[in-house]
Structure formats: structure tokens, C-alpha cells
Amino acid sequence: MAKKFVVTLKKGLSRCSHSQRATIAALGLRKRHQSVEVADNPANRGQVFKIQHLVDVEVKR
Image (tube, rainbow, N blue to C red; front, side, top):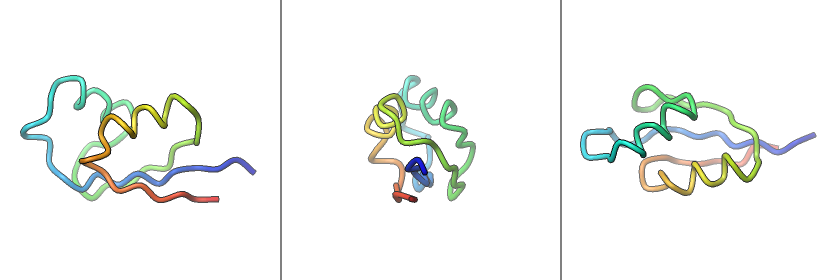
């Protein structure tokens, strides 16, 4: 079974750059306290790393 991440948006987007907003939208997050489950692959790891100060990440096995 593949590993997955549960990503929860914990902060608002008022002072984010355009590329950070686009990354959040690409992960499927729309509003605060929303959680999505994404696959553990290098592309998603890079996206989470870019917005790590805005989200909480939990590893789901």
C-alpha cells in the first residue's frame, strides 16, 4: 500500500505569493481547516515543502 499525506491548510492566504496560492490550489485546498489526502511522490513533496509554513502534514500509511 502506498503512503499518503494528509495536508490541512492552517493559515489564510492573505500574504501569500501568487505561486504559493497556485500550489495550494493544485493540492486541492480551498479554505482554512480543509484537509486533503495526496499521494507520497516527489512532486507532491516539493509542493508541500513550498507551502510548509501554511499547512499541517500527517503521514498516513
